[in-house]
Image (cartoon, rainbow, N blue to C red; front, side, top):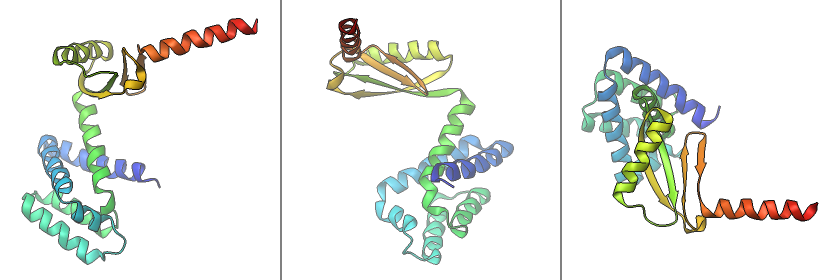
Length: 183
């Protein structure tokens, strides 16, 4: 079973319990705390992911994490279960999958807009609004810069791509010239 599929299954199980208990927001916040902790403590994350560390050491780390986070019984038992089943190395992927499930539940989609130059704040807001209108969902926007697109922008939301880059337009012109020469 691939890591992504496994992470999705565990995240979905936790998500369903959280939804049933009316604790989606609380679990989402707790999992964000875990991610922040792992970001700050790369040694701890490496220890949890390493096959060299025995399960007892990983269980000890998780117990400290539970104590520091003050997590409720269900979330604490979930974290313990990950160690018990030898799945704790997938913790970050599980947290990411839980976030995706939360976004789906809340009607939020992530969009990535690539531009050749930095995008001013007012254009970011306008782009987020246009993408929200096109998708019918709330959009969280991430802007990336890539000078290779020359100008314009490329927007990606899920499987949808809107390519208004100069590079793609030049490629289309090149392709059409190449086809006309073949005739």
